[in-house]
Amino acid sequence: MATQEKETPSGLERFYRTMLQEIYWCELHLRDVLENMEERASTDELKAAFRTHRKETDDHVTRLEKIFYLEGMGAQPIFCVGMQGLFDEGWQVIDETEEGSAHRDAALIVAAQKVEHYEIAAYGSLSTLAKTLGFQEATDLLAQTLAEEKKTDGILTRLAEGDINIDASVEPATESQLPPPDTESITTDSEPAINAMKEATAGMDAGAGSQSAREGTEASAPGSADALLVDDSGEPKGRKRGSSRKASNQ
Image 1: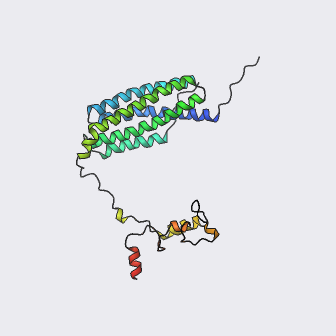
Image 2: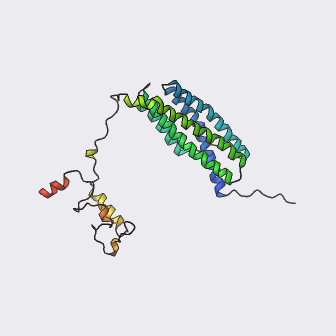
Image 3: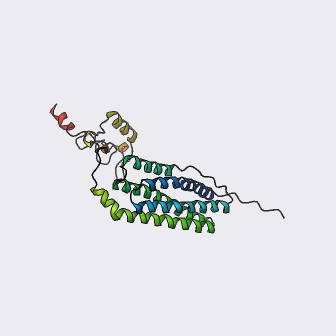
């Protein structure tokens, strides 16, 4: 009797495998990120939280490698652009905050929790996919990691709500911190851009219940596409304050 060939993986299974490889890349690099966060944190409690999660991350890597073995896959990481962006935010936090400040600790917690939330979403989805595909042992392993990610997120929240955020809220800003941008100078008054937007939306239905411009609606009538670009006086929206007053005096 001929040996039955293994069925071709479904699109969902291929997606699941790609997600496994991406989170594997995340965990491998997260160990170094957490080590740097531990070094930059100023409180013993926050240092301990980063150190503990770094040790847990070693377990996460081991679990993923076991899943790869169960699936007959090589433990090959795939670059994860989403997590790389979060890692970059973490480095930026370190660069833009003062060493030993509560501000840095608070910002490190925010950066770390963004990573945790990404991992919680990833492991939650992977666990669901593994269950759907009938990979029960993988489902259990992924669920263990998911529980640890949620626990770490809770620890970071308690640290932030304890003293760190309060201390940071009364800590004076340093001279190196830039003032907020001058929003009064921001303008979207660009005639070419407005004209291009009008051309692109010509004849489009601006929303449910509105009349289409191609059905004879006036350009400035409520509900038409052009009405989204001009105010009640017919002037383009986004002009600086005083521009309409200047026009009326000419």
